[in-house]
Length: 177
Image (cartoon, rainbow, N blue to C red):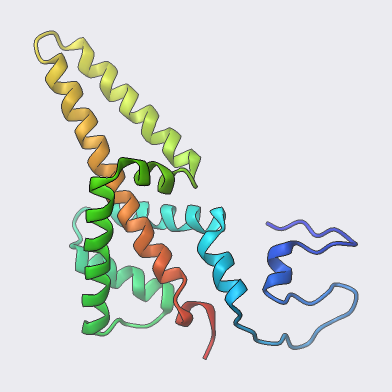
């Protein structure tokens, strides 16, 4: 939700050329400026939306990567992706995976946009770690596996978040033709 103040419209709405509320506007002008793209690429709310969307895609364990990519593309753009588009998106996902598997600081920075999900993952990891420490002989191994699993899940989530974020920033998503 956006709260409007009388004298000052919300900055995001100004960037997207929202009409003033002083008079009725029957038809809005359509614009697409670099500033709008910059806002969509850097605003925390859009990263949080992309992360939540990525989480919902990853919850569908029965789907392959290609099916997830196709489903995300179709839901976001309302178009069925062409095979070339799917290949390009798969290459992008592979590049994001490689980046986030090798750089845990980048994963932390990416997932910091949505603290609620991050806190839930930390709480889940803590609960798993506590249950692992109650086991006597395999405590160290279980903690290592839990930490490795959590790291792998977080890097996978970061990669899918960037893919969904990229889809949300396509021209076809921002403009209506």
